[in-house]
Length: 476
Image 1 (tube, rainbow, N blue to C red):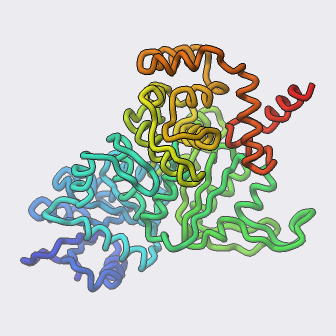
Image 2: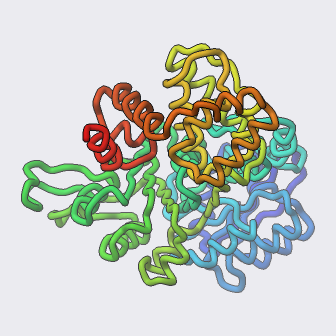
Image 3: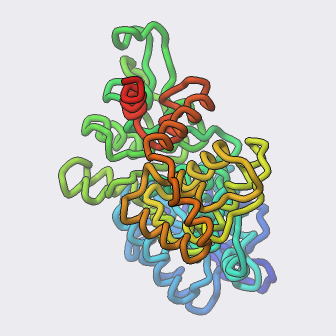
């Protein structure tokens, strides 16, 4: 029904606003049968007047409308009804305004025209599930989650920053707007991308991840868009790229700031037109997947330095997640350490049950520059190289010996001295020379990886050339 008013009902209210009455009619047909009272307006100012006297639980608004744009309408509705769930619908590439509205909280989800009917129903169904006593269930969950740690799609956390991130992922995952993830190396950007996929309508479709820093420009173009037979020397067969293979799933492009300017231009076209052309082909293919990108470097600085296109930045930066470093997450360090201790103890068939007091203090006080990935690798390595029922400070000092500065090492020893004097004495009296500790760790890692030096280097967080150089030094 068009230009309707609310009748008495116990059902939640879904408000539709679009200046095109044909679009309103199409939305109503698509959403027919959902458990909600649908109220429609083609004039955004009339919709705002309606909201001054009536509370809609869910609002879907077009962006480009005369008299009042969708972002501004949703912002004013947010002021009137903060607990409402606000969805923007647009065919226009007005990404800068949309991004600003997302950051302010006025827009919670974004749907591109033309929409997919199944996806639209999925988004509204999820929104209706969050309607309870005029308060979104997500807000209730946030309050209860503060009581203890949570495991959200393999991300372990108790810190409020991470719990807020999890809530934002739930919200953003039901939108088909591009998502950008920023954070230091090792903070878990791909885990966040996978969580967005798992929470989305696309969860049964493929999740594909590509690190843009791992390929040359020519190989990267083929990796992204695919190629046809004969497109270049060595192209003996036609091959799909990830933009085609992702289908209606999720495509994650990590370290996107390393893309060349020419590939940035092609990616911009894909986002704008939702289509791409394989290398060497003239046939245009549609792109249907959800796009998530990430960088461990500042994308804003890359724009300022002229290394990254500003227009592409605005199109990728609709929804942004900034991941905190592990050193900023308080008690999460020990919580995560225990998680990986349990995981790799079982994997390696060992007997470890916990950490000594001194080891716990090292975990809590060390700044972990490599973040969660470094902590995971250190614990995995200790479990491989040691036996017993407890990881002690001596094991941790040995594991960290090749990665920490002398100052950090001194601080660790002081920490151990205060909590485990006898352990500290055993760690410093008759200590094994550093080169022997390195040799033992490297040889054990190479053995564990069945002679695969690059894989061993990755586990030890060093380059393969470092291992080859040290092996040569031992032989001399």
